[in-house]
Image (cartoon, rainbow, N blue to C red; front, side, top):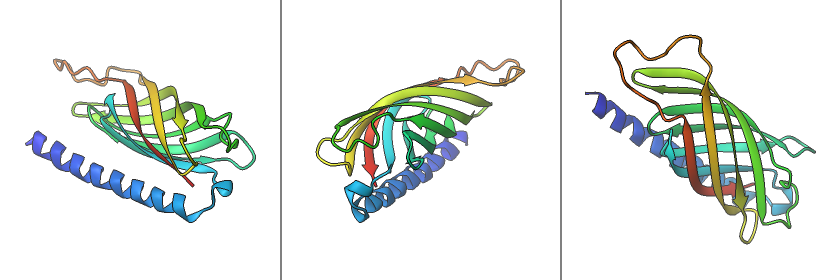
Length: 170
């Protein structure tokens, strides 16, 4: 029975991620590249999540962005974070590295916990700042006082992720 719930939940998650990617693509087309200040992304990966998506919005006049991320796979992960993107406003640069810090809620039967995340990666914008390639690696550290796994269970969550995908700028 649990497998049926997992499969149906993954289908809903995949549909939501595709809808978010289409919406982000529409936003990227709607604004001129000189006004671009944010990005959305959709990624495939290994580790905690197999399918992830999210968005980052640059804070006006700074290289700092705030964002949200959702992923499904070995765990369901929802996070809020901040990233430092030193070259985000330099439109002539093709490679934009970033460092990200986040607070994440992770869950999978029987495991759930709040985690602190740290990661980084880069976005490569080949022609314009509308569509690019994003790669990222991250690690999550549980922030709990007691063992969240019930006695007798042997579930070991993967609290790391490697992912690659597409980024949409707007």
